[in-house]
Image (tube, rainbow, N blue to C red; front, side, top):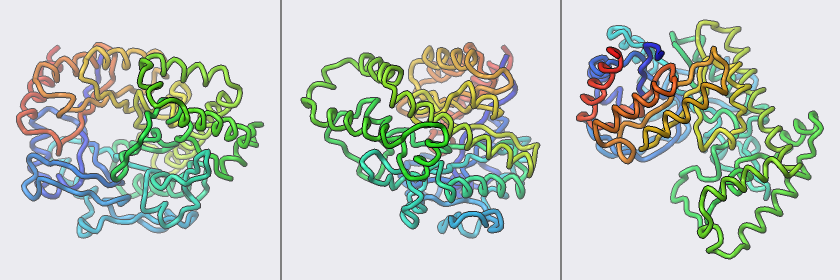
Length: 405
């Protein structure tokens, strides 16, 4: 049975521009119990239908929206960069102080390794692809500076703020080749295997870590290059002519039958688990009351390197992205996750409450009900600033119905 956990993702600019009382009174009226506030975030261009200050917003790249304490980053050369546009605000403190008046708890939605600005200033911390190019969007989870930066971020947040949970986004490997970077364009079809190989890292730190586990990453890279060369030199209509289900099947067959790729899957699983375990231990030493979760999803977890069964024994929750128009897909993913993960780990599906996923009241209600039918421990809605106010009333009605049932 679902717990009393209804959260909504919130960007800092919406909180400040609309005012915390307006935002939190709206959230309270909808029946929400928790706020997922972005405290460390990446760039983007957004349409904000009810923001009183701006309709279009260009977010800053790789900044934080709280006042960082520098002592937590003494073991790394990387430093958090505070937002320039909102430099005069400790948005997290404002949110925590104000939310209490409305009975809401605040979670820190924390983007970790996805940070273009930190990579641009420190290219040696970047993920290095099988062709030896650096990924300018992403830091390597095995790089000591990158790992200590994330640990410092979590320790900083847990030490100085009254948080319910720290949600870790982009805490392992990239979600895939597509990052939605500025004017990102590919002239070939990016199939799942191609994306997986480019979401893996082959830097010297990964090579050394792999060697500890008896894995020769240089041989894996050689195999990856062969597959990449074969893919980009294939007839341009080949992949498009093959059903996506076949491509997905071929992808998993590769991973299970090729010894090098099988080792890559295992190595990424080792890295992601070690990363989260290290964060968890540091969090315990600072503030054992703060919970921890990972943000991942159906098209992401394998690229990121997560073994969800193992990771569920380390975290308190898995925030699972379910941006599906078909409610039965939500129910199916939640049901599978509940059977694969530790019973003490909450499964919290994130449902998008705006176009192109949700645009009717019936679809919203069916999607949230599907999450409950699948066994969800809570529901998170994405997100406040993008969602037209008309849909706020739909959310309120639906949550009231769910609580009654």
